[in-house]
Length: 314
Image (cartoon, rainbow, N blue to C red; front, side, top):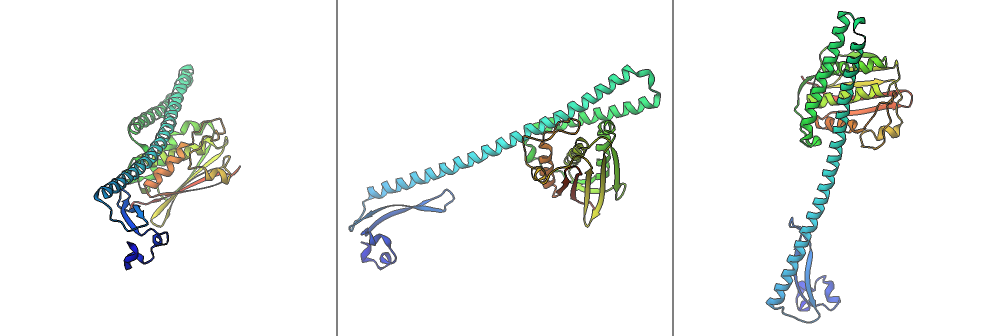
């Protein structure tokens, strides 16, 4: 009888409802946090039997089991969403890389046909230069294919970086050499402003190469014929600023805001080049893993500038 207990009478709203008898058990979440209570109330003095206590204890157990199932279902739903997003990202990324490989192989094939059809018009030095370029394209395609096969067996966004000293100038030059043919086809002018012939940064070699290649690819893709691409590397405290700038078609602020979010619709390049849009998502993910930052400035008709801030290697 709660009315006979000073402890139970104090601030007890049940007494106002004439509920003076109480039997209850706490109900807990799986982590032990209190969810509430399951209880019996009576309007008269009562001493609950062992059978009633057992039934109420069973009710408590059933409720706690239901709470655990509820949490597990929520966790599974969240995990399924994450897996679906990861699979979608992986599929689109693999499609992007596959497109790069097809494009590179297609370039090799077209140049071989051109050489065969007009073989006698080339001198020895011209052939040597062209074959060297084709060999580089073949090597790059093979390396990309190896990465593709490796990444296809894992969750791309869960790959952990292997941070080491990377000569970022060498990465720039390799990527420019890789895109030599499309640069020539659009007759683009490349302007370089490097702090030094060798600049070392803290980065994962594969990740930073994917990042630079994607940005330069877009600078080519969205630039006009006879346009310009500016590359600069300059110190900024303990970091380096890497800037890749073009004077192509540019973007609105709305387009910039969507750059690092997957969208189904991305504009094709000025020569109809395809764009999957997934590359920029990977850029942001990879830069985050290397504690580097990226910013973008652009205006329609005035080109775009991508700036990366990355830790220098001392």
